[in-house]
Length: 302
Ligand code: NAD
Figure 1 (cartoon, rainbow, N blue to C red):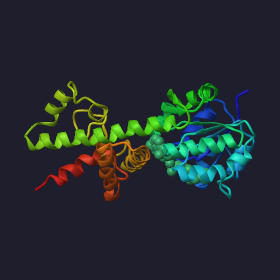
Figure 2: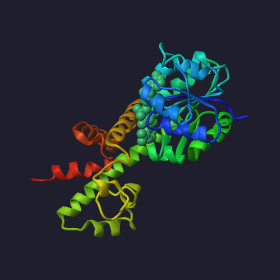
Figure 3: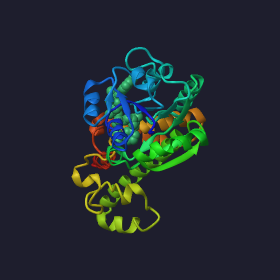
Figure 4: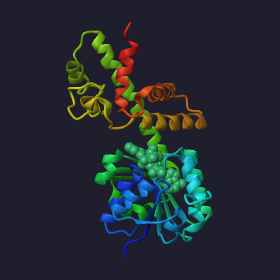
């Protein structure tokens, strides 16, 4: 028989992920503190609970997909309808924590779950809402090999690439490092296009050279910040996301937290955090993060 799943946090990502588990034949009971999210999940076949504790109490596997670390702790051990997961779940349950949170918070969440007698993996994702809907997310997983093997079948319903990155927190570590590369490289590509404009270079000429030379990277060849060279990139649809500026700002904030906690000298990661924090505050939160090129262009107008 398929294992029973409690799914906590049925927002942009959790809603479609839970729906895919239902489609694959898993009994899923869900909870969200926002009634609209709960109703949408119900329409997709998720059984609705009146609290997190109720959703977890009958489950073999508890999945959380929440905004940030504080919500994870509130769900694990807080009071009220959104809390109390660790105490309510059967001892020996498997906790899959899929939210993007700080590495330190992920390690603390592991410790809390283990202390309550459960198994635990951090399993943040990339791939966005489209990946969640299509079941093509990438999962970056931290925890023991045994727990990873135990979770694989369920993660494969929601994702296409499932990578065991190491012990507790390693999934979040991989995610924060990857997204720091992404933030820095998108700024670098955008600065190069604006410099090219100033030097009289066409976008296509710079693209044709850099895409086949040592400047090649995802920010250039897939999410190209100027319209034209890559027809599917957000720049061609007025920077509709895609990957929203608010999420890039959030992930770079987690990167700086990790840089500080580890004493890592990474000046570009810190600069990228500052640039995207302001981008999100100044109207870029809901647009694709490649819209940073417009900020750079505006700042370059004498
Ligand atoms: P969201 O805000 O749409 O969904 C989070 C849901 O959690 C909300 O519906 C909220 O009501 C619910 N919630 C909060 N506290 C709760 C509690 N105690 N009990 C039950 N429900 C609670 O966010 P999202 O876009 O689905 O993102 C979820 C996580 O995934 C975030 O950490 C985000 O950084 C990460 N992520 C998002 C994307 C993306 O493209 N949206 C991509 C990769 C990773």
